[in-house]
Length: 186
Image: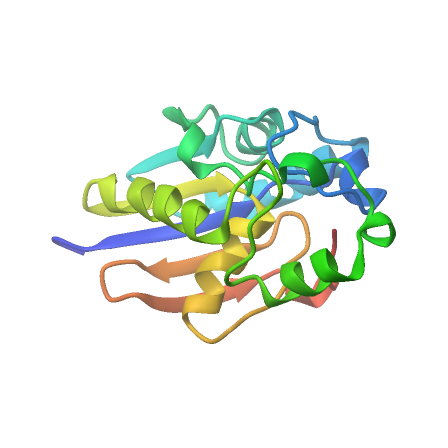
């Protein structure tokens, strides 16, 4: 893999807010009991692989998932956070007005009132990915980050907690998606 960067993106385990269908961006919500079990269930898959590094979003749900599924991340990076939903943070899908629901479904061009745009999120997340040294990296992050990347490869979808997306980041190619058989999730 000389000179190449391979990423295994892992969405964190379920939180209570996920289960309630709440928009969970930068709120530091911990894993639920189910989320902890989901993270532990990933451990055999990840233990069977060799990684040159493991990083996580600095939010508790991503760090907890890393610790339970793999071990202590070498670094926690705020740039790997979910979209900042601003004034929409914590709202349930049904509580959003139709314009915000449609904009979130479209994703591209969305800008949360008092929060962040998807373009801003893309810039910070891709900056973090591009700063990783060559090698194979395990990245514990969020559902919006996985969706952002998959959209770029015409594979737009919402993935459930603890889904894993394998990328050849150097070639900008999806290698695999694991976990969608469990169905979508908030």
